[in-house]
Length: 201
Image (cartoon, rainbow, N blue to C red; front, side, top):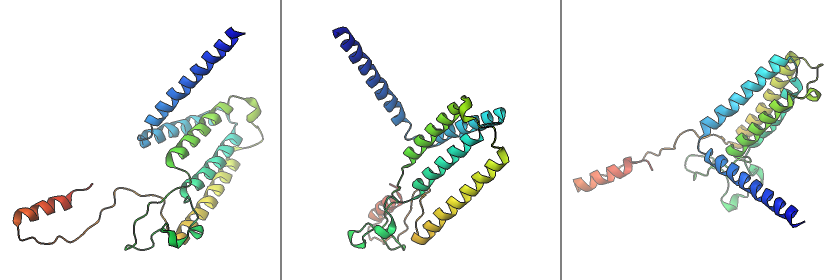
């Protein structure tokens, strides 16, 4: 009996170590956004090649597309709905240039979006190896039309929502501010102020 308990404890320790090691390597990928999405695009390419090769499995693509659209809607939506924000607590999004800059907080972070989509692609590729998921009665053109209709309807709703509440979920590059430089009587001090103002922190 004690041997069984010791073996169970050893197995539990090994599984904890494997999960910890997996988490460490997963955390190392946080900063490598481009490489992460290139890996996911590779998985998508493999899935498409597999479905084209089988000439079946369009239902898997349909389910994956629906799931990805739901995640995309969460990724492009703010954490708190703008109508539910109290204007007195200072959390309202800025509406003009003179307002204080407040970052856009997503309902679903980029990393979680990538991680969930990547897992969905891996599961979809594995599903193509089981006959139960390969329905023969669905054809490719019908599924492609459905996918594009779903995408256009979802994106039009999200874009309307973004226009209505005046937010942009993407920020490309660093925001730069321009200001006037005051002249100084001391020339060395003026150069020092100029060098500080030119720095981008």
